[in-house]
Image 1 (cartoon, helix red, strand yellow):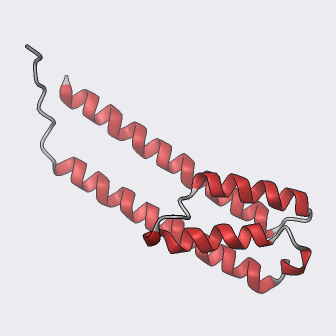
Image 2 (spheres, rainbow, N blue to C red):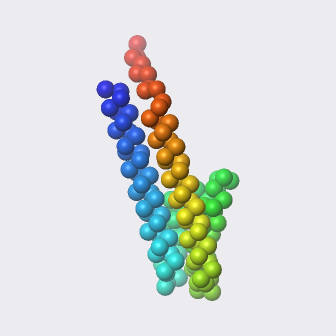
Image 3 (cartoon, rainbow, N blue to C red):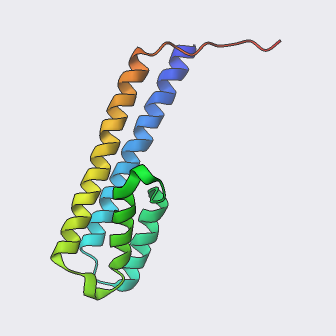
Length: 119
C-alpha cells in the first residue's frame, strides 16, 4: 500500500515537472518572437512567477527573467538578446531535467517510507 502511494506521488511529481518545463519552453518561444511591449510584460510576469530569480544558485533564472523583462523596451529586440534568452532557458531546462533524473534514481533506490501508527 505504501509502495503504491509512493509510486503515485513520484509519478505526479514527474508529470508536474514536465508540465513546468513545457510552460517555460512555450513562454521563451513566445518571448523571443514577441512583437508587442505589452505582451513582453505579460510574458515577463508569467516567467517570473514560474522561476526563482532570488535564489543565489539560480543566477541563470535571474538573468533570464531580467532579459525577458527588458523586451518591454523595443530597443532590446536584438538578435543577441533573443539568443541569450534561448541559451539561458536551455540551461535552466537542462538543469531541471538533470535534477529530475537524479531524483528519480534516488527514489528508485530509496527505502520505502516507514508507515507509523499513531497511538
